[in-house]
Length: 375
Image (cartoon, rainbow, N blue to C red; front, side, top):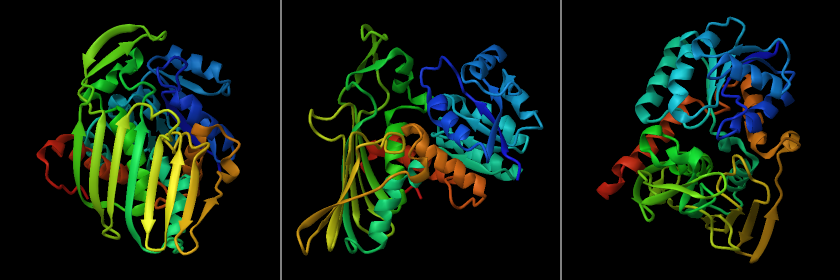
């Protein structure tokens, strides 16, 4: 079987966030039997050419300066979009219309409507889709899920999470991330950090049948700083910095309570504290941050068996993907599943729309104080 020919949108050498070179590039290069990078598309041909040279891609790699030219290339099978979220629609739609398969980073689009439109467009054009919700397939998630399914703690009766994260400072963003304060952009600590986290929780425990959410602006004014940390300006944020969600899980009826706070944790404390209580025992997952889909080193799974009162540390690792850089490991797992061709084994645009619905319920209806359903 010939390798899947990939066109990457957003493999830049100067972007504020460098997710494509840190995650997608090493994952694709490590899977050279299944994938070959055939093209790079940036905001200009010159930018794409710089990326090809900087990352030492093959001289045959094509450079494009707009999404339509990439879509028109008949020698591209899969288009990977890793740009700022509010450009996902315009950069991905041409390739979907050209009936190319697509892998879009999370969030799929800046809002539910645009995400739904992309999903319907892909369905109408018969293309395969994949969304960057790789936390569903990371080994911590699958290990915890297996422990539950194997009856290690008995029937799940509750789960609680207390999480700090999203940014390095609780009161400021660097100037390149000023858009984290703007709701219209669609990319911010809630739609990225919280959403990635709640997605792997749902992959483990199931979706909410209903939920009640409260979003708070405990620090409504945010500092914008330069690369040296000096203050440039202050802005009023449109994005809550404290999210508290309570809901009932559809699979078990058990309650799930989540508190997500933007910023670092209390000194000496873990940023991620996730407990799953069962009738016979309890699982605890702890780590330096909630973004397990990208940085899960030093994260720990423990099981407390009530009958013996013993606590067991459960081993886990990334297997064949362990040698890759942290951000690339779970991304590489998605690419591996996609290459194997089983569309039920990896997250798709349809999965993304479910998560977008949950975010809309959280961000747009949290002030109603009523239980809402998004599934």
